[in-house]
Length: 281
Image (cartoon, rainbow, N blue to C red; front, side, top):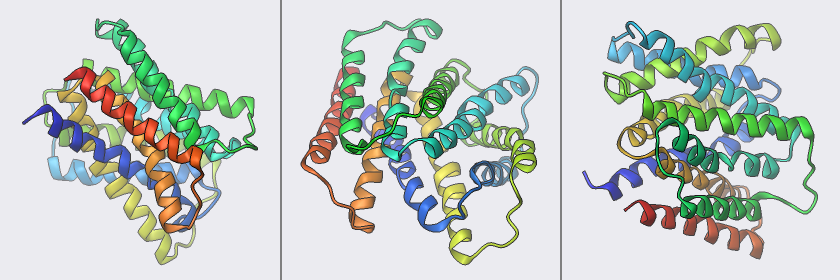
């Protein structure tokens, strides 16, 4: 299969992740960030685990626990902390630093070269996301900023280590292991720190099904598949498509306006993704 097709398939994951904001705000109950993260990860992981009927063995128990924590438990927890303490635009921009972190981690963990062009593309993409989502009244809460940066580091480390630890199983099985591990690590924290959801509306159920089956199970199969075939520094900038999709959905579904600066930001984001693809071709 060609590299361009691999890129296109992998890009579907962050584009679908861009729907998370609108699904969360329009369909899910408020005030339960850890519970939402738990219900996004664990049901999807258990479903995939039931389909694959394969458990880790040996050192892979520890590796799956580490990857599940980096890619899901820690990342999603810090993501929600950042989202609750910062305006959505600022939180998205802080998280968009992830591709730059991946470039650096890949140099030290995988032995790749630190190419100035990759850094420049990452900076350009970050600037484009900032134009897309930061408003004139953006607030900078220190705890929120720290959580966003730490979350970006967690996901970046998870992406690089996923490439370094290539599992002896299919992408479907590997995704099942990580989602299940991430959900199990989230469970005690969510159960102890948040009130239980006692009633769910039809809209809530639809939202949870979308986030779990599509936004977690399907997308992470595509994402981990991409990491198994492409370098992390090639895959990571595709994450810029997530805030771009979120802005487009807000404009098309919720009737939110797009300013000339946002349109410029969208063009820069798409340009950075295209440049990154050309750099690795």
